[in-house]
Image (cartoon, rainbow, N blue to C red; front, side, top):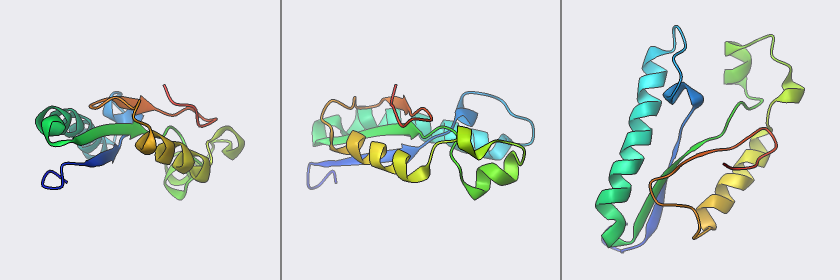
Length: 111
């Protein structure tokens, strides 16, 4: 991307990158590291035309979520396909800030 002088790097984050959950240490630290890597690459690659940001997709109706929280009501969770469409829109949008960390809510809205 740096050689072509264009591109977008997206890291999938988690609320575990900013909140401490018992028994989720390695997962939390890796997500926090990706958030920082996104900010770092945004700063380092901006002059090469490469943009980087991270997206916290929120709680989704996935097998991983079900295994972690078996009592959660799937009706309150975002559908992965809705979140994927939103992430694709963020990638296409020039308004998505380089180096940002974006949180997607259960309806697929970004903040």
